[in-house]
Image 1 (spheres, rainbow, N blue to C red):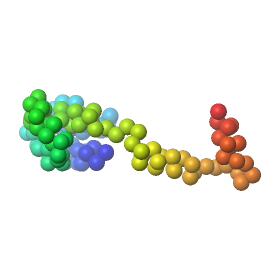
Image 2 (cartoon, one colour):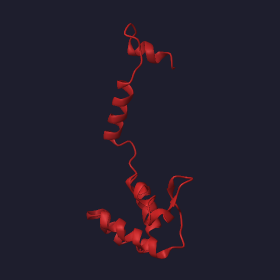
Image 3 (cartoon, one colour):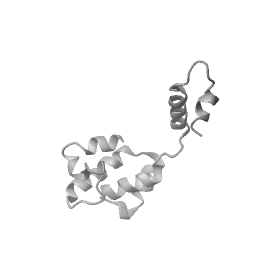
Length: 109
């Protein structure tokens, strides 16, 4: 999400599609694409950095690198995220004081 916030600002705006609210899939601006690649490399370290540097087809292609990183590292079912969403869900119940949580949520089944 942070990358989308930054990429929607100048000079990165060219790499952002406001309609889909996502990064564009390609660009003709090779200089900006190379700059994105360099910025993304600076954000990596350890094995993630080594994995990317060893992939020659990604070199100097920031958009392709970003797509690869998202595909590889997109968090799915991260325990902290699940815990936060569960807390939010259970913390915002609107059941009456006279009914149990089970009675309240049974009406949605």
